[in-house]
Length: 225
Image (cartoon, rainbow, N blue to C red; front, side, top):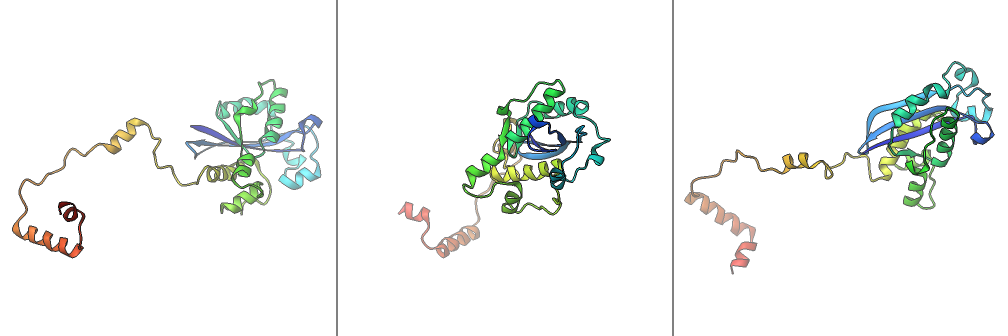
C-alpha cells in the first residue's frame, strides 16, 4: 500500500484572504515503511511574507523571490502523489491551501476523503494530551534536533515517523501480510532432510533413561501410567 505524508508552509492561515503556499514537502511510504522517495519545492507566493509567518518557517520574501510559482510545479506534484492516501497533520488546513493552489493553476482539487488526519489519530489514541508534532515526537523519542524552524519536508519526515508510531510502531513488519507466493517459500519443508536409518544404540537408550529420571515427572510417563 502506497501512502504519501504531506506538509506545507504558507504565508498565513487562510487562502480565502489571499495567503499562499510557499513550501511543499511529501514523503513516500510503502506498506508503512519510508521508501526514501520524496517531493519538495519552495514556491514564490507573489506577495509579501508577514513577519509572524517568517518567524515560524524562516522563509523570507527575498529567499522565495526566485523560486518557481505553484503552477509550474503543479503537474509534478500531482504526478508524485498519484492516487495515494495523504497523511497530513491537521489535514483541513493543508488540504484547503493545496486545493486553492490547484484550482488557481487549473487542476482538479483533491477530495478530503483522501486525507488521513494524524491530529485526530493522536487525539483518539491519547485523549486530552497535546497532539502537536513537537509533543508527539517527544512522546515517541523521535529526534527533533534538526527542527529549529518549521520546514515542510523535514516536518513530513518527522510526521511519517509519528504516523508509524501511532499505527503501532516503527519496527519492520513481520510479513504476516506478505503475498502468498512469498509465504509459500517460507513455509515449505526443505527437500534435503537426511532421516536416521538405524535404531539407537544401548548407550543412547541408557543416556535417554538417565535424562528422563533427572527431569522428574515427565508428561509421557504420566500419560502412560
